[in-house]
Amino acid sequence: MISDPSTDLPAFGSAQSNGAADYPGLDEWRSKPMSQQPTWEDRDAFEEAMTELSAAPPLVFAGEVDVLRTQLAAAAQGEAFLLQGGDCAETFAGATANKISARVKTILQMAVVLTYGASLPVVKMGRMAGQFAKPRSSDVETRDGVTLPSFRGEIVNGFDFTPESRRHDPRRMVQAYNTSASTLNLVRAFTQGGFADLRSVHAWNQGFMRNPAYSRYEVLAREIDRAVRFMDAAGVDFGALRRTDFFTAHEALLLDYERALTRIDSRSGLPYSTSGHFLWIGERTRDLDGAHVEFLSKVRNPIGVKLGPTTTPEDALALVEKLDPEREPGRLTFITRMGAGTIREKLPPLVEAVRDSDANPLWVTDPMHGNTVTAANGYKTRRFDDVMDEVRGFFEVHRNAGTYPGGLHIEMTGDDVAECLGGADPIDESAFADRYESLVDPRLNHQQSLEMAFLVTEALARPGTLS
Ligand code: PEP
Ligand code: MN
Image (cartoon, rainbow, N blue to C red; front, side, top):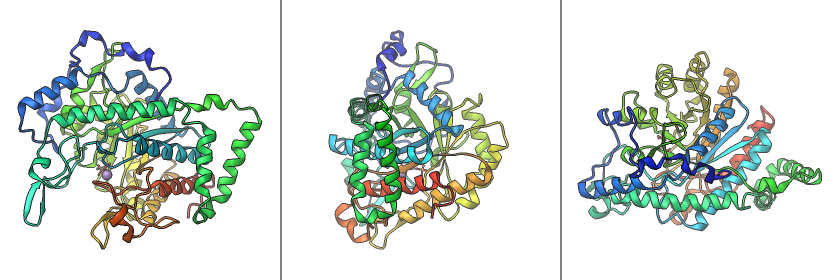
């Protein structure tokens, strides 16, 4: 992503030629309770991986991270809208040109629709190029009487249910870094090299509209088409719209990995995690006194925190105090994942408490993680209607509180998978056997993702019509 990375190249000083950033407090997390961490048995391999990652080039630049913070500050003010999307868990084998381009394409397509709906710039961000570590509710998994360590994402172990594959292997951290680098390289090429041209993105959306199942979105699609034609006729420089910023994000779960990729920005002398532009803290690791909150409080990247239904207003305010003591615009994003059935009851107290304080975080909805169910045939799934109901609830709560619903965080793919149920061209359980690919949580497929963008746009463009 981003304009001209060359201007940022000297940002991480050569004084740290071995890369190992040092900064007061940067290692304080090591003395805090630390959950969801792997148990690396091979210490030599661990040390080798740390040495290699500490010397590796940054994946993202401090200047880009600062640009993102400014854009998120605009979103927190109601002057932009954030779209975050991608896999629950990326895989090494899934980092192919086809899959990466399909995902980026889908996010760009959604963004065009949302830009029209919100009449605002959409900040585009992938759960990509680093989303390899997964928190698990249990350390072990038992199948047919055999118990092995749980799958924790390919940065830690393999998905195959064998002792060898499930062993925590530190060399995987280096592979995750390399896979992130090649993914990011392609994302930068796509989004800077003309792939993002508004006219082609618009043409792809017209392809989607050819499916009669989506006829209810025709009016909106025609309006967007007219807007694009108008821009063309009015002489808008589409050349300038051929490039777009595209940021990367992942859950900063594996603290050794994040620490090894932290660098000191030579311009400001401050630490940045260079593993991705935006890092978030998961629902299971948002302990105020825990290692994750401590570590992320020390890096300059914009930070997200997932807030589930057990979050109290006091928790939210304490997280603001710890992670954003300066109340810096764009620094903190709250990603709420309450569940469709509870968002209208659980979210208002949090939003109101924060609104009435001096904090101004960006509020984003994750309508996926509170709505996971097990299908009759055993697959982990989510119903499209539940997901949309949580989005609706999110807009309602913010409208009532007078606060700004600033973004969408979803698990999605550009491929034609069958993992979530429903949609106007519905997926049913019988499709899971052939087209369920996710190793962890179910994702919206390409069509469901676009349909969501149309539904959200209806809500943004004409408040009160989201039904
Ligand atoms: C996730 O985003 O994949 C995830 C595990 O979310 P949460 O921490 O909200 O459960
Ligand atoms: Mn997930």
